[in-house]
Figure 1: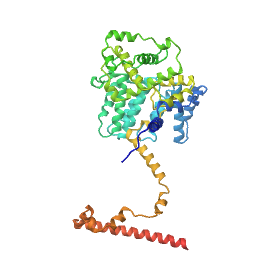
Figure 2: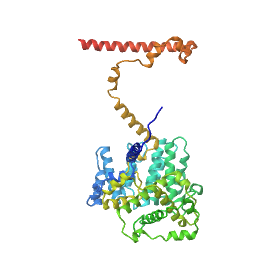
Figure 3: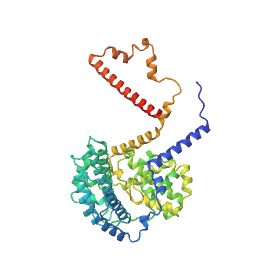
Figure 4: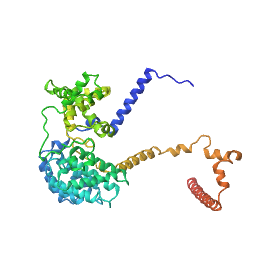
Amino acid sequence: RNHSKRTRARKRKEEKIDKALKKAQRVKNGSAEAKRIAAPRFPAIELINDPQGFAERLFKRLKSSTESFEMRLAMMNLISRVLGFHKLLLLPFFSFLQRYLQPHQRSVTSVLAFLIQASHDLVPVEEVEPMVKLIANNFVNDRSGSEVMAVGLNSIRELVMRIPLLTAGDGMQDLVNDLIQYRRYRRDKSVVMAARGLLNFIRETNPTILARKERGKFHNESAKPLEYGQAKVFDGVEGAELLAVYEAAKEKDDIEVGSLEKENEGDEEEQGDLERVDKVRILTDEDFRRIRKIKERQEREKLNPRARRKRKPTTSEITENALVKKLKQANEINNEPLEDEEEEEEEEEEDSVGVISDLEDDSSGEDKGRSNDGAVNPHDLEGHVKQQRRELADRLRSVYAGREGSHKLANKRLGGTNNLEKTKAKNYLMVRHSKRVREKQFASLRQQQYHLKKHIKNLEKKKKTVQRIRRRTNKAAQ
C-alpha cells in the first residue's frame, strides 16, 4: 500500500494546526496571557469615590436588610470586593460572616469566597485567626464528608495565602500540623490534593512551624512571613536581574548545565557581579515581555513536581547557588523561544502602559486562579472530584443537546439491516457454537424461568406501546 510523502507544505500546515490547538488550549485552561487580555483595564470598583464610606454605608444597610438571601449574598460580594481591592479595614464584616460558616449553610462556598476576597495583608491577624479555627472545627473533621473537608482545607489555604502572617499566630502551629496530616486521607483524592496544597505553600513561606520531616528536602530555613505593615521594597525594576542573567546566558551559548554545577566559588562570585540591566539602559517593551515570560516559566516550574525533583540540593548559604539556578533556567529558556510568532504579532499591538500594568499584576503575588481585581470563584474552593463531576455534567448536557432531533433521522432509514436482524437471519449451523446459544443450552431451570418472565414482561410492554400508537392514529384519523 502506497502512502503519500510528508512534503514541506504539509509539514508547515501541520505545524500551523498544532500551534492553533495549543493556543486554543491555553485560552481554555485560562493561561496568564489570556486572562491578562480578557481582564478589564479600569474596573468600576477602582473608580468608586470614597470606597471606605461606600463600604460602611452598604454594610449598615446589609445588617438591617430584609431582602432575599440572594440579594444579601450580592451585597456581601460587593463589600468584600471593595475591601479587598482597596485594602480597607471593616472589622465588623468578618464577625458578620462568622454566623454563616456552617457546612449546612446554603451557598456556604460563596460566603467563604467573600471572606477570602475581603482578606488582605493589612487585616489584623487577631480578626482572621478565629475564623480559620472555626472553619477547621466545622469543616475539617472526621464527622464531615470528603467534599466538606476539601472546601475547608482549600479555604484555609487561600486565607493563609492572602495573610501569610496567620501561620505565625498562637496555636496555629498545632493546627497546621493537624491539617497537613489529611494528605494521607485515603477515602477521597480531593482532600489529599487540598492538604498537599496547604503543605507546599507553608514549606515556601514559613517552614519552621512544620516538623523537620515535613519541611521537604530543599526548604529555605530563613523564609519567614513579613511582619504586619512590612513591605518588600525594590530598588529598581522587579525581575531586571533575571533579564541580565538571561542575556548573559544568551551570549554564552556553550554554557551547559553540568558545567554550571561544577563551577567553583570564585566563578560564582564573578557571576554575582552581573550589572543590573535597568541601571545601564532604559528597558523596552521587548525587555518587559521577556521578564514576564521568565517569571511565568519559573511559576510553572514551581508547580511541576518533576522540576522540583530535578533540582540540586542547596548548601548552607542558599544565596551562593541562587544565580547558578537562574543561569540554568535562563539556559533552558534560551533553548526554547520565549514567545511564538503569533504571540509576538499580538503583543506588538499593545502599548507600554499595558505591559507595565501586567508586570504589576504578576508581581502582586496573587494566584493565577484569581482575576486582576482579586475576585475569587466559589467553584475553585470545591474539591477536585466535584469539579470533575461538574465538567462531566456540562459535557453530557452538550451531548444531549446535540442529540435533539436525531430520532427523526433514525426513523428515516433508507435500507440495510442492523446487527440484531442479521443475527436472526443467520443459519443455525453458523451460530450453534456461539456463547449465546451454548448458555441457552446449559441454562438451569431457574434461569429459564427468569428469562421467560422477562420475555413475557417485554411482550406486555410492546403490546401496550402498540395499543397506544393505535389510539393516537385513530384520534388523528377522526
